[in-house]
Length: 307
Ligand SMILES: Nc1ncnc2c1ncn2[C@@H]1O[C@H](COP(=O)(O)OP(=O)(O)OP(=O)(O)O)[C@@H](O)[C@H]1O
Image (cartoon, rainbow, N blue to C red; front, side):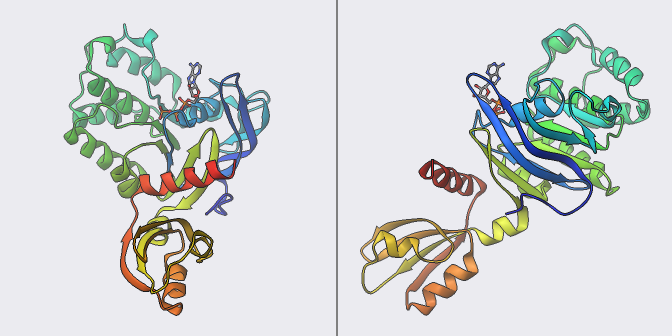
C-alpha cells in the first residue's frame, strides 16, 4: 500500500482534504498521486470519484485540509494558471454546451489553452472518427465522449483527468482511446488520472490504483504488486481450523470454509501465506490471482467490519 509516494513533485497532493455535504463526505484524504504515471481511481458507485475530480477542479469547494494540483494550491490563494495545464473529461457532459458543435467548443478551448494545437485536435477527431459539425446534444453518448476526449487532449495537458472515459465507447473506439492514452504518456512527463470500473482498463493502463469507498481511501497500490500479492488459496487441513486460526494466517484478509477441512483464503501477501500454510503442513489445493473487483470487495468488507 502506498499513501505517500516518494516521486516528487506529486501531480496531485492531498493533505487532510475533505468535502463535507449533508448527504456525503469526501475525505479527509491524505495522499500523493505521482507525476509521469497513470493512476486509476476505483470504487463502487457513489464512492466519491467524481466528487474528487470536481474538488480538484474547483467545481466543489473543500472545507478542510489542502489540495494541490501540479504544485498549485486548489482554491482561494491558489494559482489559476495551473488550470490551463490540465485536461478534463467529466463523467456527464455539460448540458449548457449541448447547442455547440465540437468545432465551436474547440474554438473556445483554443482561445483558453495557450498550448492548444488544431493539428492535434484534428488528428484526434480523425482517429476517433468523431463528428465535428453536429450539435453536441444530438450526438450519441459514445460519439460525444470521443469529441470530449479529443478536445481535452488537444492542448497536450500536463495532467489529464478522465472520469469514466470509456463510458459509451464501442470496442473499436475503446481500443483507439487506449492507444491514444498510451501515446499521450510516451513522453514520460505527462500524468493521467482516470476513474474507472473496468478491470481491463486498469490492467492495460494503470501504474497505481487508488481504491475509494464511502469517500475514504482504502489505499493506493502499485498495480503489479497489487495483482501479484493478492491471491485466493484453497487449502486442506487434516484437522479443522476455526475462524480465529484462519484469520491468524499471515496476509489473510478473508477466509471461509469451502468443504470438510477445505478453506478458501483471500490474502494480500501471497508469498507469506503460502510459506506459512506449507510450514503448518496444510495442503495447497489451488492458488489463483484475484480480479480487481474481488480485491475491492475484500477491502470494502474489511473497512465495513472495522466501522
Ligand atoms: N449533484 C449532486 N447532488 C447531491 N448529491 C450528489 C450529487 N452528485 C453526487 N452526489 C452524491 O455524492 C456522493 C458521491 O458521488 P460521486 O458521483 O462522487 O460518486 P462516484 O464514485 O463518482 O460514483 P459513480 O461510480 O456512480 O460515478 C453520492 O452519495 C452521490 O449521491
